[in-house]
Length: 171
Image 1 (tube, rainbow, N blue to C red):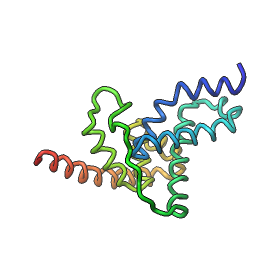
Image 2 (cartoon, rainbow, N blue to C red):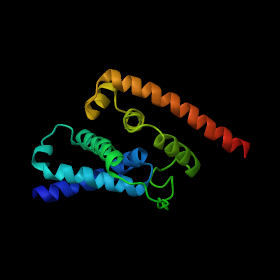
Image 3 (cartoon, one colour):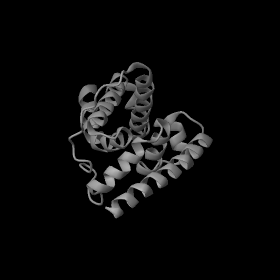
Image 4 (cartoon, one colour):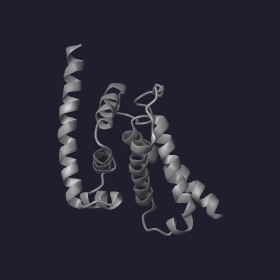
């Protein structure tokens, strides 16, 4: 099997999982798809080295999260705001059983309002079930930073999701 075929097989088997994580990071499916493709592009360029890594799934997630943080860092300095195009994809699409459109919409809206690194920490810790050490390694930050970002982000999420649920209940 050629390197290209081996990479295609790897990418096809991991795409849905990475896309779900990317959606939680980006807040819309279009940006999530772009992020996954960027991560796959980086991995493909060094596939001969990557395929020998002990845990290629963990490496793929690390590349995804770092691409997200890098892209958002660049956006802050390089983009000019324009009128946004509405995301037409269903909010809960692709998450499976237990996720209705309302709960996914509330969660993704609350996540989108978090700072980039805090969002990445929360998604890694609670969506991808990474430990503090694994999260720190994936993002290239200290374990103390992971802990403090987690605490702050969860406090913000509790407030924002609680407020959203109260608004829904009053309607």
